[in-house]
Length: 406
Ligand code: ADP
Ligand code: ASP
Ligand code: MG
Image (cartoon, rainbow, N blue to C red; front, side):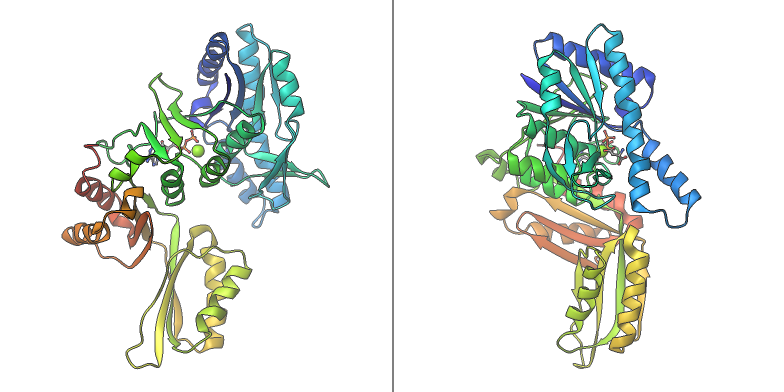
């Protein structure tokens, strides 16, 4: 088999861990497989580099940020290739650009456009273990170094697996699979043997960082078989795959939470056509992604409040823009709250079962957790609540939908 193995930050967090990973790789090769490895930076390294950048400048340029951050993954590739060689097997470390990962030019959140993987294929055919730096690529014209957004090594792995037509893409991390919710918060969480791409996509985009959202989107589009496993043991992991009949029988598959959002409220804006359009156009033009939106009905037909959520990292910029537009529109003012969290339940079974949202609201109400906003899709329900209730809400919802029972 041709296998792509991706190792996350904790899995390569120190030299002992890197040596353990090298042993796993050599074992996989000895079992008769060809192996391409994708690595993250050592645990904490990317955060450390970001912090240095902010010490050097109050507004670091995104181009230089990419150059800086891409260095973390380079360190791990070289060390891991050395550790594999030490075990007596041929290995070659490649940067993202040496592996032909071509991206667009949107620094810090570049998209992969194509992978020209001849060098990878050639090295594999010559019997090398190929160790590629995740999270990074290069633009075609200018040859600028780019990065793919936080957690982006998952995307590198899935995209490379698709490019080399791998039989399997294994994502090695610090938990032994995808659970019904974050097992570090709910010890009773249950490991799933398999999960559909669609549910995994929702879980990831609603806050479960076990797989990066875009990597799941890519895997779904190109039907890359992905397995999430632990690099600390040999337990079978979770297969992320196409939906099958059994999956619809389960109403709720998982609970996710996201504390990285902030809520803006425009107070007392005139209730007339065109107001929302003006406001959200301005926010969108600044490349800020708006998630939940609530507009109250005005009791007197004169004025109303509009609340919406944005990523915390964009909240300052969003506040400035909203204050400008609020003034133009004659609103009373703008409030910003970042002590909020979004709690979501996810499951393809929701398509065919009713009463799921009601059960969610009731469970939260029974624990005196107030809901500030709601959004739904075919396979998920999300509620905005106070951040201090996050863990409680996750636990009681997990319990209410009997997720530890399977
Ligand atoms: P890596 O550094 O290997 O990429 P991450 O920290 O990005 O690892 O992702 C693994 C973490 O995801 C786990 O340690 C766990 O805290 C978190 N997590 C959140 N939700 C889930 C879930 N439903 N199942 C498993 N892990 C989850
Ligand atoms: N090192 C990068 C990050 O911390 C990419 C990754 O780990 O996937 O976000
Ligand atoms: Mg990750």
